[in-house]
Amino acid sequence: MNQMVATALPGIPLVAAGDDLTALTLAGLDGAGIALCDGDVLVVASKVVAKAEGRSHRLSAVKASPAAREVARVCDKDPRLVELILAEAREVLRIRPGLIVVEHRLGFVCANAGIDHSNLGVDPDVVLLLPLDPDESARRLRSGLQAATGVGVGVIINDSHGRAWRQGTVGVAIGVAGLAPLTDMRGHDDLFGQTLQVTVLGTADEIAAAASLLQGAAAERSPIVHMRGAPHRPGAGGLAEVLRPHKLDMFR
Amino acid sequence: MNQMVATALPGIPLVAAGDDLTALTLAGLDGAGIALCDGDVLVVASKVVAKAEGRSHRLSAVKASPAAREVARVCDKDPRLVELILAEAREVLRIRPGLIVVEHRLGFVCANAGIDHSNLGVDPDVVLLLPLDPDESARRLRSGLQAATGVGVGVIINDSHGRAWRQGTVGVAIGVAGLAPLTDMRGHDDLFGQTLQVTVLGTADEIAAAASLLQGAAAERSPIVHMRGAPHRPGAGGLAEVLRPHKLDMFR
Image (cartoon, rainbow over all chains, first blue to last red):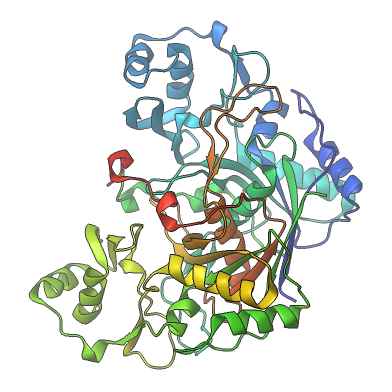
């Protein structure tokens, strides 16, 4: 039967800088009674990857530039937070009260450069940046799991993004290893033997969205989701494949 | 355990105008050995809803207006197809070779007004429009299933949409009944007792994306997906909740 099972790994503790995500994932799989199989995918919330990699910053240690202070005035944010947002951005697309839409240095368009300030812990001085290189984070976890189990799974680091025209955030992939982020159906015959012309499926993003349902808003209690039966093709991975080239971007 | 199971219902035949989606869904559930429970969600590909509702049109019966012929010249499409696209659109946002980005009469932004021409069957003269009122289609299936089983499930009609800045299509909800399309976390405490400020989850779209993985590109062999354990809140549904109001749209 064509079936997909997503399991939020139980017992994952609060993650701190220096924690070993491979060890946490293996313990969570063990707790869930899951033995990894070919074709499985692990989806890890960017927040815990960033925490493990020590990507939290103290606002009190940041000095806001004049440019950041000017943007902060328009969007009504802490100028030191804006300084960090601008430092993580390649380009600012829109500024509105409460919101700075940027092209992140990693290449995707997102709000506030993905910097999380809302629920990092009890200390309002601490903010969390996205992982430095989520593709590399995904490859590292994949390698660690392969060394421990002998199975080469797919790994996706996911984050919650808003969309241009729809309300509500959805999980998307910001790092991918060991699976093809897109599934290109062009040239394949459909049921009737006609050739599909234009269909490229955003497979990694759909897996990221499915896992996000179980991670919930904070992605803190259930940051690691194991997926079995999620259709995808093998591949090296890489976020770059998912990003629309600037010359094809009609909504910048 | 925090787990979600998605099952593509087996044995769904090719759908034709006038077919009863409730009967097909009940037969598919039976084939999968699934008895509906509270909290279950059925996701149905827009294509089979549209087919059942007789939304196919013959291009040979369409007369292209001068406006449609002019747009067709720019985007290099069949002028009669363009005529149908424009008739389904409230507003044209962008025109490029091969592509017309519109605000659909249903309110969402999508390519080519969601009119499917690539793989409808052996007859290249036939194209398929989106369902007339996908919310109503969802409510009708929900009512039918409730009458037959006594269980009030959630129903989502999903379609595959491109995104502004990312490659690959993802499943999104275009009709929703019996569940809250968005999950508003604002005002809820996170793990640390701080209040989440800005998080509204696009739950219906995430469920739509998860189901889309199993439906595949053609959504023809596996058009109906049963989801158990997908976290969501009860609600009446309705696509309107998911659409970003024009005054908050920064990318038109």
